[in-house]
Amino acid sequence: MNDSAIALYRRAMSLAQAGRLAEALAELDRALALQPDFADGQRNRADLLLSLKREAEAYAAYETYLRLRPADAQGWSNRGIAATELRLPEEAVICFDKALALDPRDADAWNNRANALFELKRFADAARDYEKALKLAPDLPYADGFLLQSRLRCCDWGTVTPHRKRIAGGVSRDAPVIDPFGNLAVSDSPSAQLQCARIWIADGHQAASPLWRDERYGHERIRIAYVSGDFRPHPVAFLIAGVFEHHDRARFETIGVSLGAAGESEL
Image 1 (cartoon, rainbow, N blue to C red):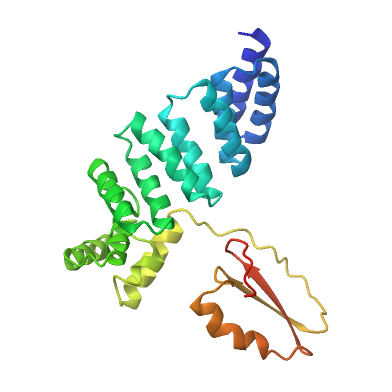
Image 2: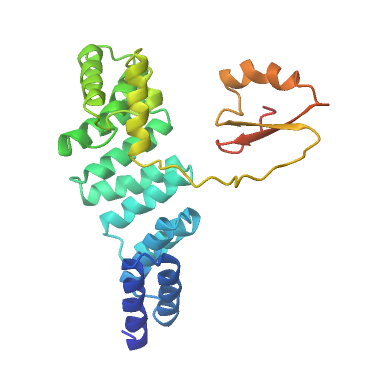
């Protein structure tokens, strides 16, 4: 091993522990320029890229790392997470397949593969994976809710009533058992739906700092922004299209902010 590469690697890890991730990544890049086959360095570089939300680079970095250490189940699992964030569910399933072949006791890998299968609308396969994940980790956040949603999409009605009661009980205990949208199929209680949404927000969706700083604007037309993940062939888009079309363009300027994937649809 190159002594300078080791020193740079240790400095990078210290920076990472201090939360200075971008600086840590820069030091790792310097270390790996000296020692490209340093497996630990490549793994931590990929992990840092994933933590920095640079998923495309992380996905490629895990490929580099796994050439050096192909039997690392967690490496395959993390690459699957990067693929999921990139909306590549087929590739994610392949990665989780390899992770689970190496470590079949990893509840998170079962759950993550189930999520990718759910995205691919392979609901029966997703349900089986959620069941396996929950056997290994009964309190795995949101897995039980997605298991119920998978079964509903398979028209598997046999356990729906007790399953709904279990989910409703979890929400009443402030447990992260189901996402708010999925909960609409479980409960028609406004208070339960509100509670579920509060659990979801508190679990990892903290409020961002406001961009508006009390500035005053003098636009000629009132600006209205529509924010949606459904600017695509979707019932919501079809229903609201007439609203967009009938705005008084002389008085209003409309802006669409899409939260979904880019598509070719006119919507």
